[in-house]
Length: 161
Image (cartoon, rainbow, N blue to C red; front, side):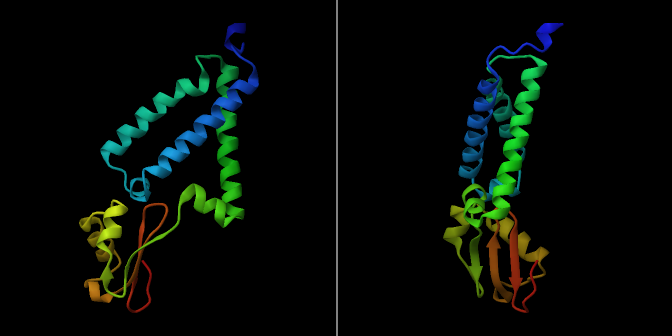
C-alpha cells in the first residue's frame, strides 16, 4: 500500500521533468503552425495522441505512484495557469507562445504566398469567405489568420466575421 505513494525520485525531479516537457511540447506546437492549431484533421489527432504517449515517460521517469502523478498533474496545471496569466499581462509574451495574427488578404487581393506559408488551402480560405458572407474577392477588405487558426474576414462594408 505504501508503494502507491512512494516517489521513485525527489519531488523536484517531477517538477523539472514537467517543466521541460511542457516547454518542449509548446515549442513543437508553435512550430506546427497556426492552421494546425485551429483545424484539426484526423492525422493531427493521431499525432496529438502519440505525442502525449511519447512525452509521458519523459515526465514521469518510470514512476507509477499516485504521489508522482498528483505532483506531475499539479505541475502541468500550474504551468498552464502561469502561461495564461503571463499572456494576459504581456502582449510580447502572448506573441511568443501563441504567435501573431497574419494578414492573408487586403483590399480584394489574396496573398497566395502567405496562404501557402501558413498552410491554408484555397478551399479553406474560400469557406472562410463564404461563412463571412463575402461572395466575391473584390468585397474583401481584410482577411487575418488568428493565432488560434481561425480566419477573420472583414468585408467592404466593415463587418467582421
